[in-house]
Each structure stands twice: as structure tokens, then as C-alpha cells.
Length: 277
Image 1: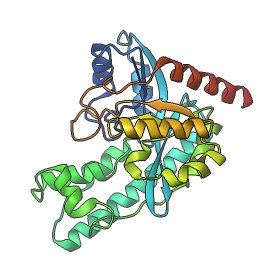
Image 2 (image 1 turned 135 degrees about the horizontal axis):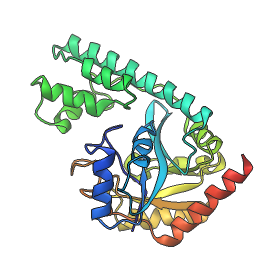
Image 3 (image 1 turned 135 degrees about the vertical axis):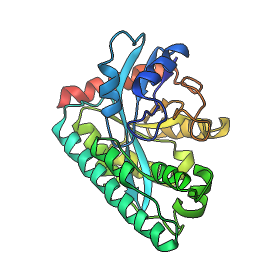
């Protein structure tokens, strides 16, 4: 079983890299990609863990791009973690996440819902990629809301009073960053964003693949995106988007997987990108 979408405590997952590897092994995975948001720290930690890996571990990442003021996520696979272009770009991404945390904190304060952001900022200084999920947790800890869903619905969703837009690269720029690190770029869960109208232009910008298999895609969506991929000569990716909670993604690694032939084509494309560097 091949799962190319998972998260750890390096971004917004609830499991440490070690615990994620244990869960992946228990699920019987043969391939796992760790795709934390705007950081490869979780993958690097997992790669160094001795005696835990019984499956192929793929270097991955989920990078937040910005289109018309809204987030659009691009998955990168087989990226070179030592790429200076990638690492400097990710530091800029994490710096903007810290800026966002401070501005959202100020907005919450002005609304009468103060929180203490220090633990979030401390985590960011240690290399964790922080964002609205951690802000939601801070609202829970301060007694202002009961759940992450409530925090987003009342304060943190796009258009809500404490929402602060991200500043960042366009999807096309993110595709080029991933290619520059020898990776393959896939548009993450397009059904979540309702961004079908952008896929053609992203393909023209060099996008390699579409995430067809995802917990939020039903059979009709999977069929539509597989047809779109075929029309544009794009590859297909997929995974559980596992975060360690039933509120986001699948409840276990491996509940959504990618067929082996699709993975083989993805690996081949990555080898082609590497030979061009």
C-alpha cells in the first residue's frame, strides 16, 4: 500500500515522526511520504530513526501557495532536502507564518479574546511550521472555544474577524521551487479548494500531477480528476492526508492509497527531473 500524504508534529499533525512510522508499519504500508506543511523537518527526523522503517520513505512536503488571497497547496515529492533554494524558500514561508500568528493574536486581543502565543512562537523558532490549527488550540486552552472546528467557524476561517491572509509565492512559483529541488509537483486535494478552473494554467506552468485519491474526494471526484489528468498528460498522486485525528484527513495511514502503476510513473518523473539538475 502506498500513502503519499501524511503529517507529523513538525507541522499540524498530532503524531511525532516516530509515532507516524509506527502507525504506517502497523497499517502495512509499503511506501509512505511525509508531507508536512512548509517544512521537511519531520521527514529528516524520521529518516534518522533507527530500526523503525519496514517500508520506503519518500521525502515530501506540502507547500502553501497563494492565489487571489487564498491558500492553494502544492505537494512536492522526492525533493532534495539539502537544496539551498528550497531551504531558503521554506524559511521565508515559516517567517510569514510567524508574522501571521502575531497579527491574528492582535486581532483576537482587540475582539476581547486574548491568547498567549508564546508557545506557538517558541515552536516556530524550533523549526515547527505553525499556523491556524495552533491558533485554534490556543483559543481552546484559553477557554474561548471548545473545539478546533468552533475556533475556525467563529474566528479563523477566511472572512472571519481574526483571519489574516497569507503572503507568499504563486502556485506556479511553488512548482518551480519544487522542480529546482529535483522534486515532482502535484496539486493537493483540488476538490477541497474548488480550483478546477486553475488546473489547465498550472499544467502550463509545469505542474506534474494532481492528487486524485484523497479522503475528501468521492468516486465522482476521483473519476473527474483522473480524466483531467489524462487530458492534460498529468500524473496521479494520492494519500490519506493523515493528521492523527478524524477531524482532518483519514483516521489512519493507508486508508486512502495510490495504485502501484501511478507511483511507478511518479518515480520515473522524479528521476527525469533529477537528471536535469
